[in-house]
Image (cartoon, rainbow, N blue to C red; front, side, top):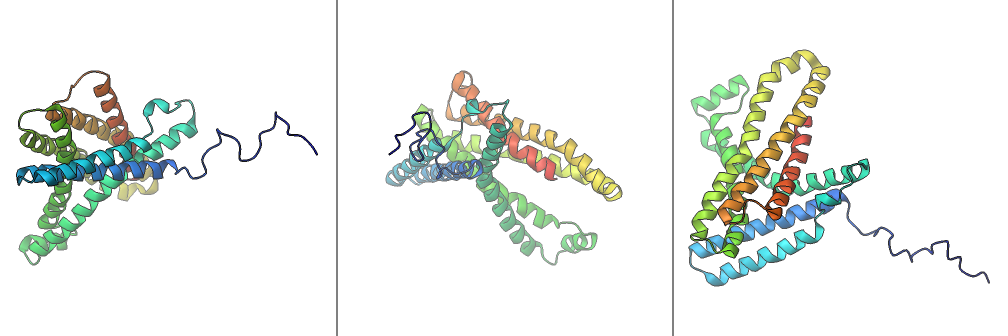
Length: 276
């Protein structure tokens, strides 16, 4: 019988072969995003339990925070591992970042849709609603409901991400600091949205006249603008969150946090800007 050739790898014995069960970049990012979302909601639950003086429930919720944070850490792709000279590596990381942002964006979208529906019901039959229908625009009550519906989960997520960290640093009044930081950080989420709405409203007439060429030009202009705006917004939120939790605003950990946040916001912002 023939012996094994040491220069030729044996099928199934390559210790460095890719794991066939390893999720793709987008799926991995989505899993990290889901774990982060759950962690924030557990954090919000822990804060609520503190407010109503239920220490057992608070402790249980904080255990949920730790569990979900551990899950998120296992799936994270650090930006330092990305080879900027390798288009495949960059593309996979971009896909990972979009997947990571998706759960939060979908949660806010669902909240906005629910709020819009409730707002439409509340404003049905009013003069403003009838005028908006005639003009082919969104009724004020519907629009207000959409924004409020998106704000509610956003504030809960931001507050819930701050509160466990505030407990770790031992700052005074962790509940008040977390709420103030959550509201402030969440408010930044809507600055790019409002700016984008104004931008595309301004270009609506141009798009109608220019057809596909105008749309392509708008996308080329909007993509980097939206990407930069989202990156700045996410980095700004990290500063607010760290300040509210009593964490250092400078140093290696803070700098890494800012970079990861900026990249995490820039990738989906770039995509949304391109899609219009």
